[in-house]
Amino acid sequence: MESSSEEKHYQNNINQYKLGIIGNCHFSALVDLNANIKWLCWPRFDSGFIFGSLLDEKKGGHFSINPALQDFVSQQSYIENTNILVTKFENQEGVFEVTDFAPRFSIDEGFHKPLMLFRKVRKIAGHPRIKVQCRPVGDYGKIKPEVYIDSHHIRYSGLTEPVRLTTNASLTLIQQENDFFLNEDLYFVLSWGLHLEGPLIHTFDNFLIKTKEYWQTWVRHCTLPKVFQKEVIRSALTLKLHQFEDTGAIIASCTTSLPEIEREGRNWDYRFCWLRDTYYTLSALNSLGHFEEMEKFAHFIENLNMGSLDSLQPVYGIDGQTCREEVELDLDGYRNNKPVRIGNNAGTQVQHDAYGQIVMALFNLYTDQRLLKKETYPTRSLHFLLGYIEKKIEQPDNGLWEFRGHKSMHSYSALFHWVGSAACQKIAILRNDQVLEMKAQMCKIRAFDLLEKSYSLNKKAYTQAIGSEDLDASLLQMITLGYFHDQPKQKAIEHLRAIQKDLEISPGFLLRYKHTDDFGLQKSAFLVCSFWYIEALIYLDFYDEAISLFKNVLKAQNHLGLMSEDFDIHSLSQWGNFPQTYSHVGLINCAFAFDKALKKPAFL
Image 1 (tube, rainbow, N blue to C red):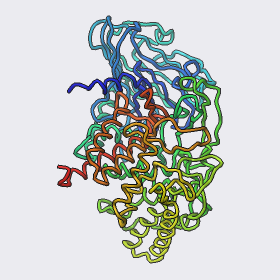
Image 2: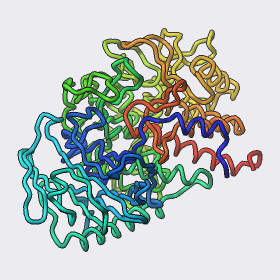
Image 3: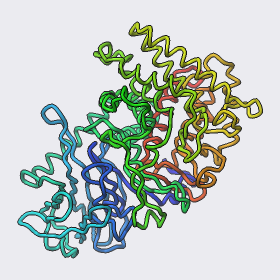
Image 4: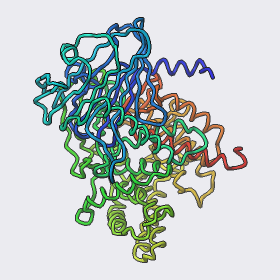
């Protein structure tokens, strides 16, 4: 089917973030249309980059494989239902493709996910010449390693661990960065720490087959909606890559300091585990029928030692430790947008919504009939979490959007006090835990009273905070989380339309809020707000409107179906850290909401 002229207009103008993501739940990398590794942090998501030209072309290092003649066209695609990326090049000399992946497959009683990047170059037609550049760096570009040629690999010395490039290509030509003819399939394995064991080509092909089988099997085990399956699969595979499997932590995004909008300084490090974000990611993965991520996150939560803490931080390092303080680096920044920050001061903020969201993230552990051990899972964590809600429920916080230096009684926090308490109450009834049930009921009532204090008769909507008339797109979730269940439907519709009128800047695209914050006024649309809005429309039976807006918002995807955090409706470009878990969660939730609506006679 041919794209409409409007769709082509979007595709031609979204010229940022032409990137694909690969990974193995231990590290991830971003690859551009020049088959350049634009972003790779080793050995962990939150480590310094060894390739970071996404933030600084001069200091960031390179690992590119592209035609010697720069007059070429390229395209990217994933091997179907995998996180294996293929970049295809074509020019007057010939055609070839580069296959990139990070190995991940079952072995013994666990998964093999080495700190190795695998790249294969295959000639398709003609007699192409290629050029390979491999220049890793350390400590965010401060260290340039010494380069040595050994018998079968190039060794980069001076980083915190040995880095080796094992290949069947000419080591001399690669070191000298000279172009050469592609006469045979070439294999490249870049490794951190331990070197590649076993013969290069056999090991490479074996790992590629096993990794492909792993991802395609994982997708086969997904429960999918009947609509938008292709989009849901790509979003699901992307979410999976954001869990640091070793501890169970889930990061918000694999990048830092990609600006939310040009020249405003809204550049943040998202390579940490926000308890809130994790709830959203796990809820989407649970809808897909995957529970192992939830079980691993439960261990991460247990290791926070909740009983000994007065409160939890909203964000933690992926090892469960305190989130690092912000430091600004001497890097150019993406498209010269400074500052470049590592660390995140949100860890020092007060954000009380997290307690209810952790309860929701763990809810299925206690209730889902597919989990055979649900009756034996301890409720100790729930008692701790409800205790936090009980103690913090009437204390102001910095809120979902992390306002710096400003605290309020935020309605979003009260909403998740209400939702978390209701979830605890349901589990308590199942477990016959009368103490937990009684406390949960009291907290639920208190949270409801707080939310009602934020209702504006003037706006006919619930506002961002008690005493405020500002509206907030996050409160669209009051509709989908069932807050209006016992109230007239018209009240929910009025709430939705008030938010739409105030915050929608283009069909389907919403601001988070409209008032001035620490950096000025919002300019870019926050993509998860679009999906919250569309999901609320479906919930209230506005199906035709919802499907039209959903298709419009999907134009914000890049060429591979990946989404950033923000979208600029004027330049039609992606902004913010990338890929963003929030956005992909929103897509998945909307698809399942459409699927559920399809079963209603009015939508058939």
